[in-house]
Amino acid sequence: MNIDAFRAAVKGAVITADEPDFGAAADAVLWNGRKQAAAPRLIVKAACVPDVIHAIRFAAEHELRVSPRGGGHNFSGIAAQRALVLDLSGLNHVWIDSEARIAEVGPAVTNGELASQLGARGLAFPVGHCATVPMSGYLLGGGIGWNSGAWGFGFANVDSIDVVLADGALRRVSETEDPEIFWAARGGGPEFFGVVVGYRLRLKALPRAMTTVVRVYPLAHVPQILAWKQAMMEVLPNHVEFTTAMTSAPGSDGAVKVALAIATVFADEPEEATAIHAKIAASAPEGALVVEPELATPFAVLYDIIGRFFPVGHRYAVDSSWSDDRAADYVAGLAEGIVSAPSAETFALAVVMPPNRPVPPDAAFSKHGAVWGCIYTVWEKSEDDAANLGWLRSTADKLEPSVTGHYVGEADLERPERRNGCHSPAALGRLRALQAIYDPKGMFLRPLPDTRNTSLPIAA
Ligand SMILES: Cc1cc2nc3c(=O)[nH]c(=O)nc-3n(C[C@H](O)[C@H](O)[C@H](O)COP(=O)(O)OP(=O)(O)OC[C@H]3O[C@@H](n4cnc5c(N)ncnc54)[C@H](O)[C@@H]3O)c2cc1C
Image (cartoon, rainbow, N blue to C red):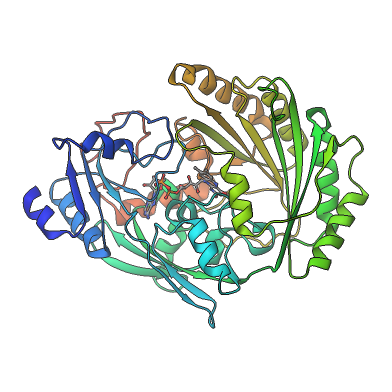
């Protein structure tokens, strides 16, 4: 099939490199204002699942690699490949069975949209922390969502997944149907060897009293804050999300750094939420500069607050990690790093997971631990790229002795070694073996975004 016949066969748009709007379309593949180097060869905006199947068959015939693109939100820009970029943002159906507490969603459905539609029915899901991120790559990477300490990670609440494989076959995979593909799609992220075109999700009851208290401390208090949180998570119910944000004090232009101790409670009754916050307050470290009053934070409010930390169009680079026995060193290292961040907008998060959190099912998502942390490097001008990227990487290097693994959804995948650090050696070996079975010609191989690897089985 030639390109004209392909264009005629699909409902969505096919944009070739010789078209005037190709450059803008290629830039729009990535959400990050910093566009990594790899430019697509062809962009296909799928309008429906048959479009995805047509695109896969076209790519197979022409020996093109395929890069499925959900929302292009991965900070490392890995969705932008020198390949056929298959934009799934048109696949945004939502079907909810409130009785059965099941939803079927297209990959493009965002956290904000899903939370809103479920909330209207008294239901919820461990959606991610930012409204604009779609289910697509969020769930494929694992999904560290709101209230994960009680609900489990996003992928653990996926019932089945609809996948188009490299041979164009559409399959519904689950624990009982093609379980090895299901295993790989739950946490495989960019190692996955197919296109996810739908998720069937197991839903939760919406916590009716979601409230948050924020305490602002000088950054030097980070060790005490961590010890307090670790002690509290031993005794609090799992439906408390306890995060430390290490950031610039408002109006200080980065000269003053603070630690925000943020406790969000996902309770059913307001009295329960208030009682939990009182328990947290009773052992809070001395020296808070500010203690905000308990604030009602339904998902819409949480998303409004979080959205302010991620201005659209700014330049981003992130790295995220898990830490266990050496969590105190890890979090102290994050705080130390933040002091010298070149940009005032840069911040780091550290989340203490409940010790008796749900055990994740066996899946490609094979790295997790007691504390999860992430460095969000945020700046505005391209001339500051080198300083910010250099700072991120030297900070991450210093943390490495206290790190037990990385989270593929927010790891610095532009570093060659990071891809392997996101999975256990056994899981990585199993992923490689499954890739060889289901994608023998490497259609879905994703080299690093800033490399032009011509030694791939399929020249791109
Ligand atoms: C502001 C912001 C906040 C975030 N907050 C969180 C958070 O709270 N929790 C969390 O876990 N993560 C979070 N993330 C990370 C985010 O979940 C991941 O980066 C995720 O990959 C984004 O999904 P996407 O569909 O936009 O991925 P893309 O950038 O489009 O793609 C990333 C990779 O996944 C592959 N991929 C994407 N969709 C498919 C598909 N349907 N089929 C096959 N392969 C696919 C792509 O080929 C690519 O290799 C956040 C990201 C941002 C930008």
